[in-house]
Image: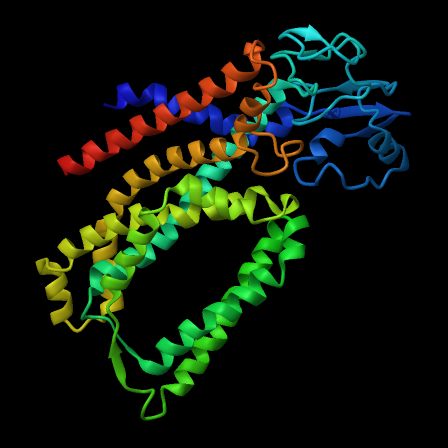
Length: 409
């Protein structure tokens, strides 16, 4: 089985390498250049700093402002194998009426080394650079969306499967204040920080998540204080399985693509970012994980070693985390592999339909969308379409192999 899966692992490994090395494979700025005897690394800088941010050096910042990266008379310069940035419309632009440039043609107004290896689209954007950027977008969107879905699915599936409808007993104060804290935590963590999130990066999102968790911890602490009163200190039974499974049925009854696109349509164009897309895909993909975890835990919780752990006086939380849940994680890996493939297709579909700013957020879907203007330009549609197909097939092959091993075990 390992030999059969070797091509699939090679394909996924190659795509991950391209995604991680995007700035070294496709970059419109020189990775290394020498000006006036001084050495600069403007292309390498894009790995950790956004391209639009100014340089400390006045000369480099002037080159950035006037976009003279390819025409400046360097003493020495080394460009990436694909000397164009994803989504870049080169300056000087292609002559009016040129249309898409065929693969392998050198840019007519740049030095001979600046070739469009896979041609350009109708706007003059390099297709090869878009393919490299699409690999990062697909890998990041698929992986992070499924990590989010796995987190939600594991939590809700564990609650539904291990405690069922009659085993989860919580104090009224903790239950009510935890539920009451969700709305203000969401408001202060995300709604009030929306402007920062639109123009910010990972730091702003981590800050918002920290605010959300901090507000929730405050409400949970208040709930513990409220538990000291006679009324709120009484325990109540929460039908976790009933509530969670009904919620999962609601999500399953709505087509994921339509749901995400409707939510995205309500957002202004400038707020349609990759992080929002990841959050939307993750929010609709947790149901499969939750169902698998619930089904396994319904079986595991009745096994002898779980009964023995209860007889030894272990808490239910310890039994779940140390004994029951680890035995239910194997099946979730199968869901993860299939889920990443689904997330990649969703991301490409939404990009094709116009989600986000297709000038800067280049992906395989935006390339397919640009091919609609020139159906005869096969080099715009075939590379991204074929890559999506191959990636999804590789992920499905890995998922099927993992499923067979799980069934055999």
